[in-house]
Amino acid sequence: MFEHLQALASDPILGLSQAFQHDENPNKVDLGVGVYKDEQGNTPVLSAVIEAQRLAHEREITKAYQGPVGNRVFNELMQKLIFGENNPLHSRLTTLQTPGGCGALWLGAKLIANSRDSATIWVSRPTWANHIPLMQGAGLTIKEYPYYDASSQSIDVDAMMSTLEQVPAGDLVLLHGCCHNPCGTDLNLEQWQAIAQLAQKNGFIPFVDLAYQGFGDGLEEDAQGLRLLAAAVPELLVASSCSKNFGLYRERAGALSVLADSTAAAEVVFSHMQNASRAVYSMPPAHGATLVETILTDAQLCAQWQGEVGQMRDRIKSLRQDLAQALAPFGDFGFIPEQRGMFSFLGLTAEQVARLKSQYSIYMVDSSRINLAGINQRNLPYLADSIGRVIS
Image 1 (cartoon, rainbow, N blue to C red):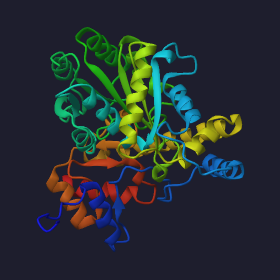
Image 2: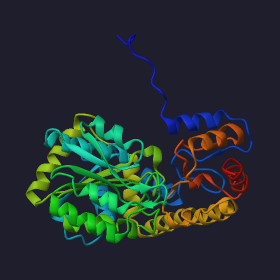
Image 3: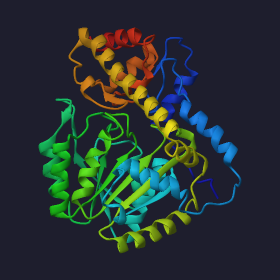
């Protein structure tokens, strides 16, 4: 049955990780996979999560199914985290727990694909590598809008807005809520407002990927753009993830939130969200959502968690400053501290990236996108010197 199949190429980022693991150079540096790492190069379990696990274990009395909706308390808490405590849109919102942010992205795309024929989603150029396979796999047609201008290390606002002006009513536009992956260059509030007005006027539906809330400027600050959007448009989708800000990567805790144009429409949408999820993964895993619920419903744990998110955010910002300073002798890298989140483009050619890998055991994707969290004070001098050698 499978004899006609041919082996597929490995995922480029995961393939980098495998190559890094087999590299015997003691000075090797992994800047590929998008997970947070501490100064020791570890992806830690947050202290708040460790305590939440202890409490959840003590309180757990069943392993029974929760159903396609998942953890309803988690859903409400995620909705508040995203849209705010006293959100006036609550009656028009519905939230469903999903297997991570990928599950939320896929479910949102599938919901739209099931709702209309030949549905199209516009993604930024560039965007996260897995956005396109997820959207296509759910049945959507992909188009692109300009976003990052490599020559100026900034958003090409005129080209972006000119393209979005042409997006037809009913099409989706995928937006990065904060900490753009892969370029790290975010929309400011004025640009969010302009997109909101355009969506309201032309009728396209924003789909916000909020994978890094808290890693940019703060938990509240990082949600301001999408909240502006939600206040202006009749319909909106948000895929959110607890992988980064709670450090629950392997637990697959995420949520899809949908804003409908009425309370009645939200109830109908909720039924279709459950139906679509039931046909694929049936129901999301419980453990990660239970940990998030435990943290967000305990004032002391919540404060501890917020402090830990702040520490991760501050470390990344500090690394941006340190890297720009270390690279200053080789060129102008002042754009790096202006960006947000874990990612940045260094502006290297594919040939220079290949040399960094083959000669210096420094691993990054061909576009020269790096994960800043892979840098520490031990490897920074070696990294900067190696980059200087390949660009000189």
